[in-house]
Image (cartoon, rainbow, N blue to C red; front, side, top):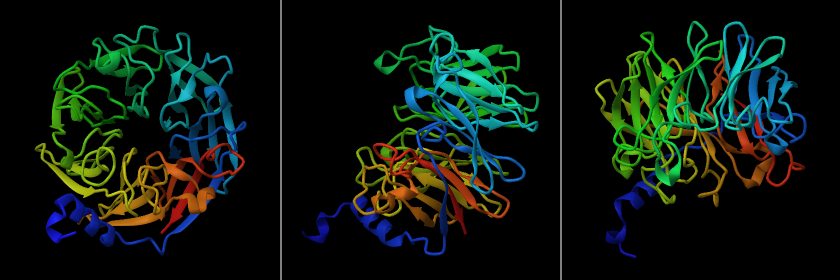
Amino acid sequence: MSFAKFTLPMLLIFVGLLAVPPASTQAYEVLYAFTGGADGAGSQGLVMDSVGNLYGIAGGAGYQVTVFKLSRKGKLKVLHTFAADGSEGLGTSGAIARDSAGNLYGSTVYGGAFNRGTVFKLDKKNHLSVLLSFPTTWFGAGGGPGGPLTLDSTGNLYGAGGGGTAKCNGGQNCGVVFKLDQSGNETVLRAFQIGKRGTYPNAGLIRDAAGNLYGTTMRGGKGNGVVFKLDPAGNETVLYTFKVEPDGAQPRAGLIQDAAGNFYGTTLWGGIGPCQNRCGVVFKLDTNGNETVLYRFTSGNDGANPIAGLIMDAAGNLYGTAQTGGEPGCRDYVCGTVFKLDPSGKLTVLHTFGPSNQGKGMGPNSSLVMDKAGNLYGTTNEGGNPNCYPVGCGVIFKITP
């Protein structure tokens, strides 16, 4: 083959494979491997308290849900197992949230009074209250939120999920952003429509001091999703529309924001690489709505298809996970990586998942958590316990710099 036959994307992939350094100095440890029994399986992300305990939500047989606590020594305690009849909710839908008093909040995809999902509160005594059962029609009221909930200082919850007032692709509703008070009163802040303002919000939201909400949609705009702002009155402003493959497509995760007001996020698709719809990107959006692609995944040892969001340290380094790629032969398969991206756009792989060591987990599926010492914690959806059929029930891991 002559040099002239190489395309620009192919050259970029080749350069990317050479340029991503491995993480020879990182210590990776499995803190807990789920069994698929009373402890559940496939944890959906973590939250940490002030002394380093981790809290999360996991699935189980028949979509049953468990909420757990993992001590710093790796001892897991199930705080609550949801009712088998589904009245409290069925099916996990994202990481939980924790308030300053130690109460935990989360949502489910199914179950509740109308089998459209619930929003729940688990207090410090491990008593669970169903704050909301989403209504059977979904219209106007949401249903099955796709990401973690956001708390304000007075205890109101904000989320995004199904529902809405218009039908989108495939006959599903276009999605809503909602507010829920501690008494279970829901207000729909925004019902999305087919068009340029985005459809299918599927991630958590962030909230500023003025009460504005910021998030992403998977579709809408020009087909590949948008970044939006929602003011307290429910008026939407589209901050960015994903246009073509190189700048990313279909963000599945929420945003983070730095002190200067810039946003950072990931997209599942777009960019470059041999993946079905390209391999995803890490992007920055400045306060004027200008996007910069900080990194384009190649599905090599750097990973591909980031489904989770990012975290940032005090020096401006970004940390995240990619769900596929990783070990050789893992292209388009659920293996994945944990990565660090410095402010110059240099990506370092902190850990590579793959079938050569399936017991350490595969398919990281959620944002990371960082403690005061800089250690990283996360979850995988597969791998771990070899007795958990067919591909393992996932793990909770720790990476020590």
